[in-house]
Image (cartoon, rainbow, N blue to C red; front, side):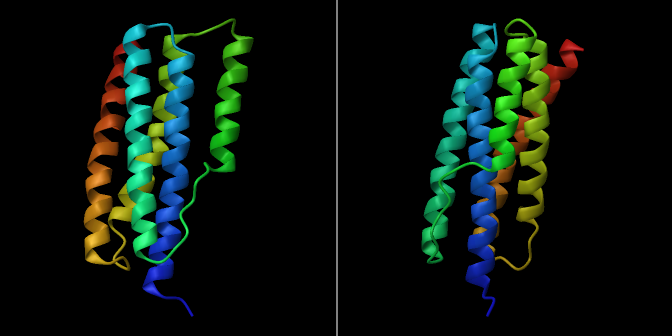
Length: 151
């Protein structure tokens, strides 16, 4: 039997995986960028995404579920691809790193936007997700502006 709690837990765990992908992606970006300004920004955003992950994990527990604690396979593969690309191109390239970060931001923004509009979720949870979406969207828009200023 499918309950609203099951749906909420499944959706939250999907958001957790994507948020962990993002946190790890920002961590990788911080390690692969030359500019200390970007390095600090990426490290701070990685920490913020980990905080968001913990909040979502707490929400899963309120619905009686077991929260995810690992990123998705696709996220792991993407991070390894970025590492390989950096190695093959001879080192950090801020423009290339920003491009990859924006691609990741496109994914997380779309996922949170869709989740925030899910009418099957309890109203309180939609509000939590909508609040997280605003933060994710702001980060996305900031990265997009940086990318477009570089190109």
